[in-house]
Length: 138
Image 1 (spheres, rainbow, N blue to C red):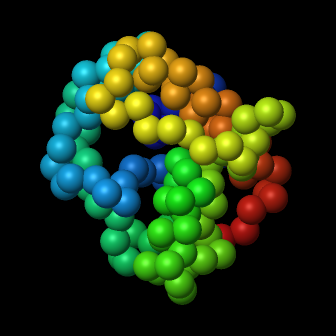
Image 2: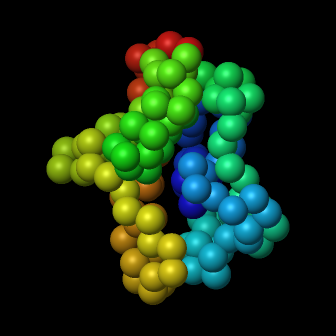
């Protein structure tokens, strides 16, 4: 949903954005509720296929955002050469959402996906503003 939220932004810096998971099952399709939420942003997740992050993706990325601190810690442990480019997406959210984990709604209700989407959108807007301001270097 984070990639869909990025593409839904009207104003954003030019960036290549992709999705991968730490415990993703390669080839798994997006959950139906994630597809429904993304559709509200005019983004089609029906053809999305999950993939697990690997060393090549870490190397090729300027910034890697995780949904949770535990996810960031896992990547930092498994890919120590890329510690500096690993951040928690919630760090970019304003106010009370800042640095809070964004819980995975996998298997949850449409309402749970909606709450997660709200958190993701807030963080994505903050990330876009940070990138546009040149506050992160790759």
